[in-house]
Amino acid sequence: AVGKSTFERLLSKTFPEWQMATEPVSKWQQVLASNTREASSSQNVGNLLQMVYQEPSRWSYTFQTFSCMSRLKAQLEPLSEKLLKTQEPVQIFERSVYSDRYIFAKNQFEIGYLAEIEWTIYQDWHTFLLEEFGDRIALHGFLYLQATPEKCLERLRQRGRPEEKDIQLEYLEQLHTQHENWLVKKTTEVHFENLKNAPVLVLDVNSDFEDDPAEQEELIRKVKAFIKTL
Image 1 (cartoon, rainbow, N blue to C red):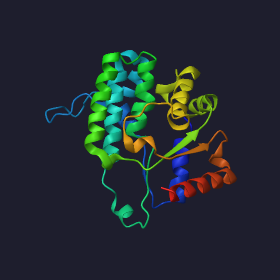
Image 2 (cartoon, rainbow, N blue to C red):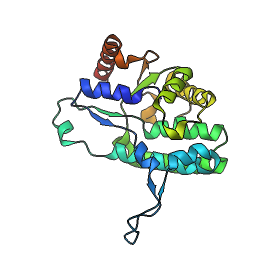
Image 3 (cartoon, rainbow, N blue to C red):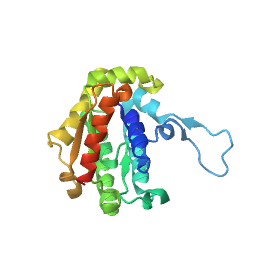
Image 4 (spheres, helix red, strand yellow):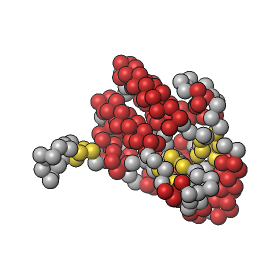
């Protein structure tokens, strides 16, 4: 709830030639319980996002597996024809297979929602897949939207997503710490060479920039300058 969707809309409006890949939240909210030809038209649907918030010790590994696979698929999508015709093609991913591991799965393990054996298995297949795909999923840099946990909680309440109604400030503080340790302090151990020196642009979004043209202009100016360095 830092303001990613609002920021992505701003980027899309300013740079219509760029390709945006948003998080597939709707897929997490509607996971088909059956996907066979014989299944009836009234297939059961599971809201995995709701399940992991309601019973994190039971569903965290399942959710992190599914969310990471969805991010991997997004990063492996071929470039659109429109983007291929662009002189300087740019892809923006709302989150990546890297944030899945170094923010969310790592945090779930550290607070006890992933068992040690689950964390070990997750890291094993994560490392294997990312090494196999190599440059195909490498990122050139990160845009880190930085806001206080208190501001994120305020925006989360305004968003009103039903699955998130019980999220507390403490959880957002934990995620904030994970982001800071990885992207700012560089104290998180990362396991991929192409990631260790990836540049990071930190954008302060504590101000409500959605209706502030001056703030939007400043954010865009910083993004433009950053992209040129990649």
